[in-house]
Length: 424
Image 1 (cartoon, helix red, strand yellow):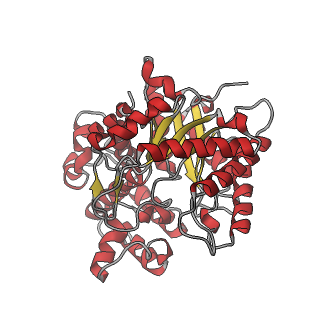
Image 2 (cartoon, helix red, strand yellow):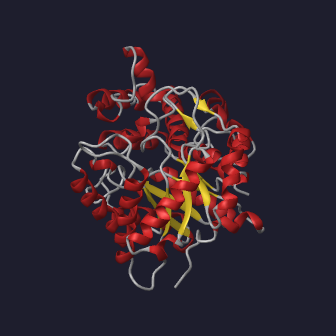
Image 3 (cartoon, helix red, strand yellow):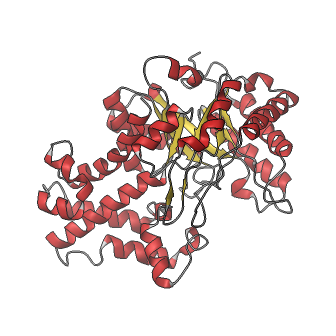
């Protein structure tokens, strides 16, 4: 049986090679393609994760089950030539969150069904998140309740994984905002207290043993904590290493474990490098990648409108605004203020909730029309300088092709570069 690549991640920083790994949390095909191409250049493994809201047995907002997601990613791997044996599939925030409007018993039954689907589909990194209250419960649950529910999910995964296949590793802990990011402007964050991190691990250890899956706890390789990084709609809270010194030091008392840092999007490369150095070896990134891709789409949209004025009924940005206003369910609870402020956030918020709309048939058609219009044309460097400024140096230096598809991939690759470099 092949060993799980992440099983010894706590030892990575004491040996040559990567000390951490980026976690690509996206279902956008261009993001996944760019990630595979980047990992190919580095001859490295690639970790791609799906969230409970995005992919589940009911389809999630992508319409994909875990098995569908695996087939989807496998098709992109075939296109890029990325070897499947170097691909790690993860499930993020696996628990009752999509069904928390239901009573706990019903919501947890759905969560067990979901984690069974993830395990059957061959996902080998599973983040257990049962921290949220269900109907009639407090918003935040007591640690022992969270741990007991998490252990029950681990038990389902353990009995589901086919014999002779790679056993999953687990991530525990939930000291982050809800899946999808923070819901309001942020000023400061409270870093997880070291004693809280230690207590979380110990409570889960006991819960796993009580659930009869003590052996599975030996494959818990990380805990989600809050190192003091997050982003709101308009601002980013930067990592300050000195504030996380005590938390980082707690890893000395947690042999075999690393910390997993969520919401690291928009951090500088130097901040990401400090996070990995301080033991936050798994760096989650999602909205930051689709934000960069949206920038590329909108830049190409403006270029197309300049080169081919009036050739489309509406621009891509106009199409997206129409879809967003007609179907507001994925942003209206998160974006506030005047009509103008909401319009700004719909397109340009750091939380990038526009990403939920790219699978929409009309959005897919509009992007397709844009790329068909630009075709395989070489885009003038001067227009790239004007509308895709961040990509201009890469084009001048020959690192990015001045064509629509190449520029979209390069936009994502520029973000990926920070993450892969930070993990060295």
